[in-house]
Length: 81
Length: 438
Image 1 (cartoon, each protein chain N blue to C red):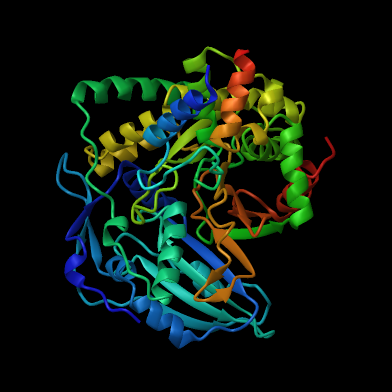
Image 2 (image 1 turned 60 degrees about the horizontal axis):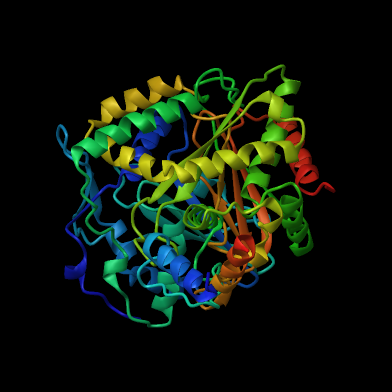
C-alpha cells in the first residue's frame, strides 16, 4: 500500500476522532506537540490494527515510530510487507 | 489593561456530568472532613511580584469576574443543576501574606474553604518570603474547573497581561450533544456493570476509618526530581514495559509502595485505582469552565504485585481494553445522565456503592499541561505545585506534575490515614522505586 494513502487514512482518523477542529496536522507534524497524549496513541494503535489487520509488536512500540504521520505510516508499511 | 463587556458573560451554565460528580464529592467533603473540595495551585517566583499589578490583572479577567458572581441552582426534581450569573459586582479576594519559612504556604490559606454557598468560587493570595522570593496561590472549588481548565486559565491571564484579544466562546462549555434514551440506558447498564465488577469488594484501602477527625486537615509533602532523575524515570518506565508514556509505571510504583505499607499493617487485598482521563479533544483551547474529566479504572490483585514490571504488564491490557471499549466516553455519558437524579439520591447511591471506600488511594497526573508554562504575569516561574482537594476516604492522593522537564509528586494526605511514620516510608520507598535500576 502507498505510504501517502496510509498517511491520509491515519490523518483523517486523528482529525475526526482525536483532535480539536482548530488543530491541523501534516505528514511531518510532531504529534505530541499537536496534543496527542498516551491515551490517544493507544486509540491510534487500535485504529491501525483494525484498519490494516496488523498487530504492532512490543518492540515497535517506541516513541520514534509514533512521532509523526510519516513514521507511523512507515511502521505500518513495514508490518504489512 | 483591557476592560470587558459583561453582557457577553453567560446568564447560566449547566453543570457537566463530571461537575455534578464533584458536587457529590463536595457534599461528601463537607460531611466527612474539615477541608472542602478546594484545589490550589502554587507558582513560585525567585523575586517578589507587584501585588497591585496582579490585583489589576485578576480584576480585569471576565472569567474570574464570572466565577465571583454566580450561584448554584441545584434545580428541582430531574432538572439539571446550573450556575446562575448574579452580577453582584463582586471582585476576587486577593490577599498578601508574609511567611517566615521559605516555600511554606501559610496555614490560613490552606484552611480556607470555598463551599458551594460561597459568594466567590475563586480566590488568590500572594506570599512573600524573607529571601525576596514569592508564591502566587490560586484556590478554587473543583466543581468549576479541572486541571486542564486551570492551564487554560493561566494561558488566559498571560494573554490578558499581553493585551491579546479574548475569545469568550472558549471560556464556557457549549451545548452538550443529545443522545437518545435507548443508547443512554444501554450504556448505563454497561458502565454500571463494568465499574461494579472492577470495584467489587474486597478492596484494600489505606483509609482505616470512614470519618475524618474533627481536627482533620489536609497535609502535603512534595518530592521533587531534577532533570536527570526525571529522564531516568522515563527510561525506567519504558524498560518496565510502560509503552505509552510513564503513567502506568508511576501507577505501578505507587501501588507497590502502598501495598508494602498495607503489609506492615497486616492489611492486604486487591488494589482499585480510578485514574482521571481528560475528555476534551486534544489540542482544544476550551472550555475553561467545567470538568471534562472521565476515568479509567485499574484493579491489581496481590498476585500481580511481585515486581513493578509485572504490575505494568498487568495494567497495560486493562488500559488498552478500556480505551477500545470506550469506557471513559461511556462513563462520561453515565455521569451526564446522573445529572437528572436529585442530589440527595445521587449521594446516597455513590456512598452505598462504594460502601464508604472510594479507592485504595487516588492518583492523578497533570501530564504535560504545565511543562511548558514558563512564565506568569510576564515573570519566569521557578516551580509549580498543586494541592488537590483531598477525597476522604481514602485520604491519600498522589499528584504527578511536570514543569520545565522536571517531575514532582505532591503527596496530599490526611493525618487520619497517614501518620508521620507512614509518610516517611512512602516518601523513601516511592523515591527508591521510581529511581530503581531496571
